[in-house]
Length: 356
Ligand SMILES: *Cc1c(COP(=O)(O)O)cnc(C)c1O
Image 1: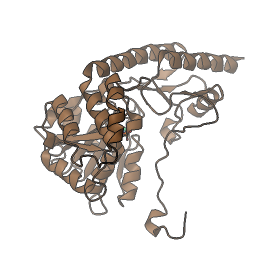
Image 2 (image 1 turned 90 degrees about the vertical axis):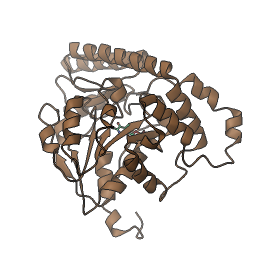
Image 3 (image 1 turned 180 degrees about the vertical axis):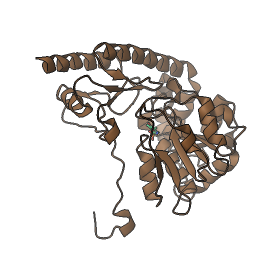
């Protein structure tokens, strides 16, 4: 840290991304990426001709991409905002709707970036603890009078909230924006897109990083009323008008159009998830019911950190979150058949070693 950094920024706790160690080849099950490559149509679209046009700025409105996304959900282009990863969309949402005069409400166990953005924008958030079984105490999220930000399905718990409960929260906060981060909804949650016509305060955030195999492309989007989209555009155009680069724009259009590929990847991941969850339960794990592309699992006879370390020593990376209520658990991305076999083999080995 330099002596020049503003005093109010010295205390920031920046987001810590899942580790990407380079010391050896790991079986990477720690950042919820897709085990599948992007759609073949994406590979075709990123042609030499497309690359040759990188001397030109991209369309600052991302019009074709937004139309393509809108068509997928039966919405209008005016209902869609696109960002450099959904992290950027979340950042613009906090920038637009929360500050020291109007705060934000989040849950204690959720996507870590909400707290970081709150801090960045000088918000002391109201942090509501989850129930003991990791479900959301819906009634505590009503009548907040300030931004409410929730992930559904939630991370890292993998648990989905039914649409009727999401609607209670959106309807219960008519004076403020309710942001529902649907990063994982394609894997089994109920989307709240059908509520958009009814609630002008609903802001849905989505990402291409998980179910559309484009984590490296950095593309996320928001679905909301035209007025909220207009707010987000005001933030973007005050910060970075060309936030989607040309290649990612092409990739995003093709990945959204190739519905068959998307459906088959999601189906394969969900099938693998059920298999892996059953196998872990057979070994004595507690596995929370997952509506996502990861499992939140607690090993028998050891805490999450020990299991994480023993897996890492065997070349398998999962995510351990040191938060007090989560110490018995690890978050395991649902990977390919081979990756999940490697996880189970390493796990059996660890459990055998414990018994010996
Ligand atoms: C992965 C994730 C994101 C970030 O996605 P990007 O689009 O890659 O920035 C946002 N929210 C949740 C809940 C996530 O798990």
